[in-house]
Image 1 (cartoon, helix red, strand yellow):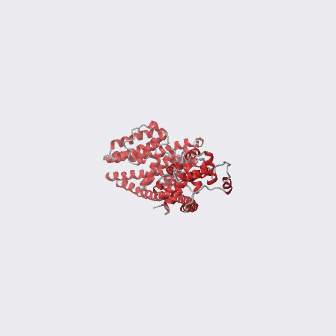
Image 2 (cartoon, rainbow, N blue to C red):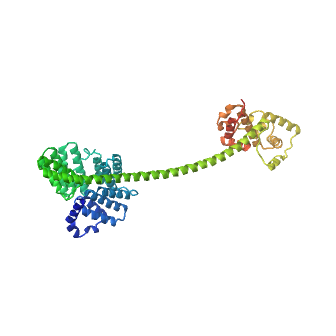
Length: 508
């Protein structure tokens, strides 16, 4: 039956086709826009346009438009599986390309297919994608897309005040007419017959104004008017509408089935059993074809979803493996760092133990200097000091070392000389000769030994910040204290405190 229908359409349009193929000289965009309307009048011609666009396409968008037109042609001929295959091919063309009007239309078409197949969740996903794309479109395109989306979700009865302003949408007259038909059927389902009737009547008028009065869309409008009068029990008028609809050269199989079903009922009520049985008989065959196509189409839609899910799972697995590799590398780096950090800690702890042993053996901690520096430091500066004076200064220096005067942050050679009642030259020479170091090193060593003893004797000092320990021992800054502490102990104050906390070297 479908093949016979197709052949008849080919014969009807042959004269027009043979006169010349003027579309070849038209731009792809103009051809697509023209045939988005013309397909409902003359699907055979649109099929040829689609093939032309496909064979001459230079971009993914042009191929997608060609597939979209081919899918519409297939749906008009009841070839649902083939139509869906074209839709999916068109959608795949856009996976890596910028979204636009045709992409929105493809998502809407797929939403409608999934909705008919009973896969509501998938349909909603495609509708939401179309809504997102609509934000990037021109105002005219945006309105059309959002209206179709709203109608697909059955919430479009109150948002189309401009639905009848067709002058703004002449470029997409067919799409706008389809919206009006869907709106009419929404009103019909709500039993708002007056609004439904107005929608269908207005649509028929506008379809005629746009040379679409012999189209599948007109057949649907007439079906709507027939349904309204059927509900009003005006069966004579209803029959006229349905018969007029069947006169349309192009019609969706579902529309034909619904119309013939109503006509069979009307003729039965009018005791025209032969005609009623004729329509019933045709519908049995048509229903079988529709169900068969829908089953095949559903399988195709499920396979497409599974393909997408498998691709998503594959991508997720690839991402998982990448993440695992990254985590492995990070763990390896962390282990290497941990190994060397522990090695460094072991080395520092050995140094800590050495310091503690020195303190326990009553040894003073001193700045590490080379043998050459030690020899040089012991060379006298040539200052002659009387023996008795030198002895007296050394005695006073012992008293100074046993005090905490060196923790005075203002301590200087001049201040120390004043405290020991001598002069700078004498005290400098004595520190140089008897202590083997200069004044700054001498004072810093006293301060470091003092603060370490405090930390060891009083655990409270282990709770203080390094800056407080620096101030307590007489250093003017945190950084200076840290530098001197490390130069004497070979570990930082922070590390020393940590080791001391963990060890049993703190007095109880």
